[in-house]
Amino acid sequence: MNKKILSGTALLFIAILYLAFILAVNLGLTGVRADLTENKLYTMSDGTKSILKGIDEPINIYFYYSEKLTKKIPHIRNYASRVEEILEEYERYAGGKINLKVIDPEPYSEEEDKAAEFGLQAIPLTPETNIYMGIAATNAVDDLETIGFLQPENERFLEYELSKMIHTLAHPEKPVVGVVSSLPIFGRIDPRTGKNIDSWGVYQFLQQLFDMRLIDTGFTEIDEDIDTLMIIHPKNMSEESQYAIDQFVLKGGRVLLFVDAHSDIEVAVPGNQMQDRLSDKSSSLEKLMTAWGVKQEPEMVLADKTYALPVSVSYQNRPKAHLTVLGFEGEALNSEEAITRELNNINIAHSAVLSSIEGATTTLTPLIISSKISGTLPTQQVKFTVDPSQLLDSFQPLDKQHVAAYRISGNAKSAFTKPVNNHEGTPEHITQSLQPINVIVVGDSDMLHDRMWARVQQMFGETQFIPIAHNASFVINAVEQLAGSTDLISIRSRGTYSRPFELVQELRFNAEERFRKKEQELVNQLDVAKAKIEEIQKTRDQSSSMLFTPEQEQAIKQYRKEREETRKELRVVRHQLDKDIENLGILLKWIDILVVPALVAIFGIVVAVVRSNRRYKKYKG
Image (cartoon, rainbow, N blue to C red; front, side):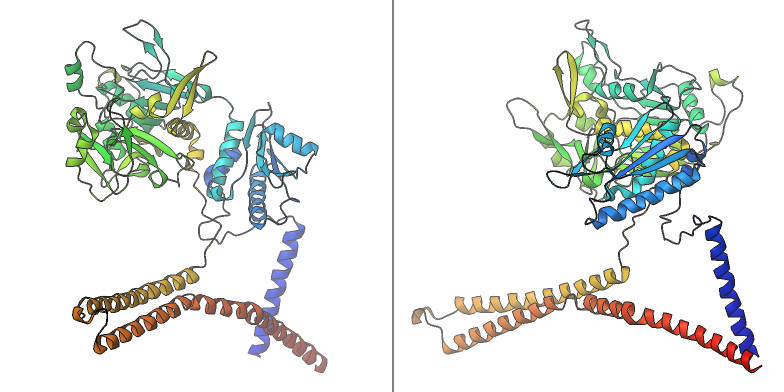
């Protein structure tokens, strides 16, 4: 009886699942799914959902993908399929405010011409044909945003790039960026000649992308329409100004801060070279930085032997590596962060050393990191050293990495217990951040100057900047991310879709480890045999011309035999290196070929037997 009840219940359960599936399909619920991946690869970030809900006017997205031409390029096809799935998710969540069109631009077609008109990148497949895999998007007033070519290696940033594109089209007005600087980044008049000196290249590029507002260094309040504040080399900033920044950040304002351990760009003290040399050219906002969870090493400069750049001391001498003039590249730039992921190199001079404060409530993400062959040097020593090679004499690497730039997020408290002076009459003193703060702190301000990142030349009356480093791109990326919506900043980088077989990796690692140990053991045996042969050759009887004694000849033969056997054994060890991997592969093949189909067949047989028994009992009854 119990068996009958159990069988009937199982069949009823299967029937209910089947009916639920049919209803779901017929009712158009095919989009319902569960994301069981470890890193939630198919789950859209809350920030993206918020951006999509905030779209007022329809946005058209055109996904140009050469589907027919890439039939024999599986990794491109697989990635294109994932891109299309994500775009469909965007269309679904946007509630009719996104119109998605997937287009296959065949050679010499109008679609290919349109892709080229949008500025999408064509990748040559043959001398006659190009493939496309890019995205163009337009809004109601025909503003255009594009991703020229979707590179599979940048897949983890795809959601961020798509959301940034949509946010830009949904909010086409330029963000307002306030600039406070004690350096002449916006140009000045040369006191010696009376002529105008152009603004720095970085500032000129920022003016093209943002609504830049200059703020006097003695400010006591920040206009409400300013989204992001860019603070450059803040020397001797008043308490009132610092309080204004503090409250601005706690209310949700964003800050890009450039402090310095020693500025080479600071305007010299006129008429007194020694006074200029002795003057303090460092900057910091210690009180605010402490509240944000970051501290600046006082009177110390970051030094790094790995990234030291050659600097010319005089015309007569060759350039020499300078421990505090650094060209960060490769692993020094955080590839997991959108700000630095596509940058090749950043040049910095005499950077401050930044570190996180223990127990801080904020999260500090390094953007620019030194090598392990790095340390610190006293600012005064760097300031008065003419020959860079002299710094090497006192340099002591600390065998750890140091940070030259941080991105700071999370909740923070005010650096002030009460309003200061001119702010006594303000509505309310904010003691805790109303939302997670967004601040970027860079330990160098010299990096903004043209000479640190570009060759400047005049062409047809216009100034041309030829980049030798990605300093300008770093600043633009940082301002762009900060000036974007909070939702955009919060979007995480997706994990990788390429998932290695962890068991295979473990087996390979163990096999290689055994191989290395055995190999080293056998190599040592070879070295011993070789040394013994050389010893015999040195101690032979010189009086017997070039002949060895019988005992020596026998010993040499024995050691040579041992050497050959050792070499043979070493070859066997090399040959066996992948044995575990091969065995695992065979096992997996048998599981795929026999075990899984067998389980399905057994399940089918059980179901058939149960049904047969029911029919038989019904017939008998």
